[in-house]
Length: 348
Ligand SMILES: C[S@@+](CC[C@H](N)C(=O)[O-])C[C@H]1O[C@@H](n2cnc3c(N)ncnc32)[C@H](O)[C@@H]1O
Image (cartoon, rainbow, N blue to C red):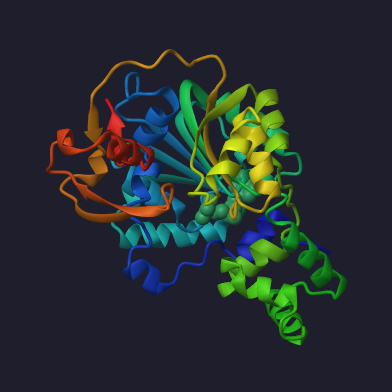
């Protein structure tokens, strides 16, 4: 009999965070601005006008570590982190203690669907596809969001993970119900077999938690870009801005895809062409609260105060030199555009 979602994550808390990860503070400085409320708000509403000073943040299905990064990215926020799995939450508590952040995050064992209250910023990374009916989860998220709130989402792509779903069927046919058994089966495959290659390329196969999360999950309901668009529409939500990593494609293909209309139509094609190479990552807002953008000057993201070095931006697919002592007047329009896209600078 298959495990419940709670049992799966109690047995294999996700992600596995090793002692070394903790020593090297598994938090990427270039990624922190993108995880901050200010960036998600500014990216969604066009400027920081109307952003709250001390946002209430909900981290849904926080797992073993995410709330630490969220706290680092949002030092002045009131943070609530919930999860179904006691083992994951216990691990998170230990890590928060090591980082001396115990008092900065309110942790509760809770099913997302039973959370109430209102939040300025909701983060749900790798969670909403693990509901029997993901639409209920999107509807509930909409009911928890303040009118000018923002939500940062990562959900599975059905196209992008199609190989994983095929492998999952194969492992299940052979009765593999534990990571150890899955690894044994992969070893039996002939060298060069696509499943074998894919298994080792898939970053989550480095430990049992990742293997269980990828291949033993009892509830896995991925999206296409178009099914996502529909789910958001039904929940009264809409696209705010994209957190997708840089997608490398020829300019003429980019132009052809741009003709296809909405963001989600374009993503449907990009994903079907296997160009996405990751899951869907985006920020959303409630429908009907977008005002025209306010004029405002550009400022460095406060989390980068005093930084003077190259930072790799996942969104740009390249490093850019950040020097927060400099006046932004010294930058060209193209440089300003790149800094803004990476959320290293924000419009006030
Ligand atoms: C793939 S893990 C992601 C963990 C974390 N968000 C991250 O990205 O590192 C999914 C997490 O969501 C939690 N989860 C799944 N369904 C949930 C629900 N209905 N309510 C609360 N947490 C849930 C699981 O226990 C698990 O810790």
